Length: 481
Length: 109
Image (tube, rainbow over all chains, first blue to last red; front, side):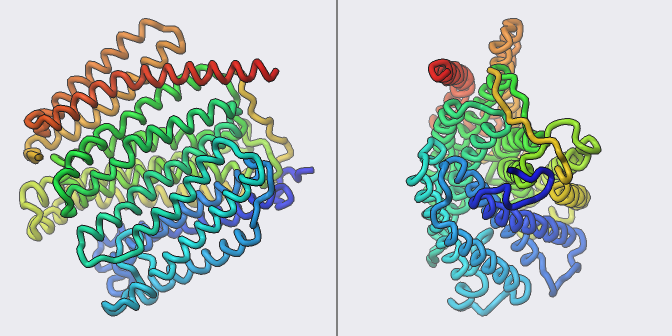
């Protein structure tokens, strides 16, 4: 018998209990990402701020690494959340899964402490192993890299063994293969070559393929599960579309990797491959609009969790604008020559990561809280009209859009002055950095960052309180169409 | 292989590239809405959106110097054909998958 309105672990299965742990660390690291992002943004405006104590390079590193790790935690948590329900079998090797969670979390803590307290080391192999591997976005020292790979392998074991003993669904098949890729592709970022072009070539496998292939597939699986849970969409339809979406994504997404190979010293044919597939990458996104309209029109389902549904909708829009519109605006090499590595890239990166990933993980947080509280009512007519989730949704999304547009303005100036007029010279770099439009863009970015941070605080407050004391049980979503 | 865009064309490229995606989405939206709600009057608007996409693509191609090399011309053609046909293809997939889903449900019940 579920305990309504109270966060009671008796309301959860074994996998879900582990998922809640992953979600807790995920949202903590999300907070760290926001905090270090605000500080790094402030250092654009006040370069002396924390200089020599917590330099921009360290702040930015922690900001981005926290992003990567909180999303990884969010995804792994989501996988554990759906695992028992999907397989209709208790998680195989749950104790090992729990152990690995604590080991991974301890490792992440040590890595962050080393980032903050040690920061740099001598140019020796030992620094790569113990302090910082030096690869942008995946700076974790090599021992931690190995830890991540081992952890993902254990998750793979949990997932594959559970599905092999329980029910094997379409979602299961896709998820098992994806877990294998999640482990395999990360290996590409773990060895070092003295040739910077070759090194960058493999590094992008992690940055692009790990993220745009394995994470996207996990998102597709989570979305499929979420639509069944929240809207009551039939499994047959959801799984068919899972296959179609994965095929479309791989069709253009894998070789879309080529747009990262334009300027790292790879052969010229990457212009053709990268340009071609990058130009075609948004077509599946646009085509999915048809699917969304069809689904909305064909069914008249009531959803059982308004915050989750709202964040799933935010995901659809965020993914479309962040990855689609913001990506395509500067993906062709003819223009990317001037924009890559400027605030343009940061603008695209912020909106795409938030839209494609953060939104769907937040949707899962709400789904988890609903069931952790015993399956409480989270549709309309919430206390206070659900102002906290609505305001946090609004502030987080407006904050992100504001930051994106601000960085776009700064990036536009950079691409013109630093790149096109001054030819990527140091003079050009400083001229662009000092330009009023650039600095104003950075100010606006910081202000919208504060708005985003307020939204984050509200989100945490809401997740801690929504459904508390609620005595109405959720009405499972049933499709009418 | 590539002829970099000129400074004067930056805004044109950013704007038309954004319009390609937005008009592509509008075309898909109107196309699907017209069919699902049985409002044929919206279909000309859908194709008008596609016409806007067509023009945007050509302006983008011109501004980004895509028309001077056969490969990039092929990219432009693929984009135009892809955006035109993708909503049709996805529509057929939607009808097919939902019809199959309904049949399965009917059989079970």
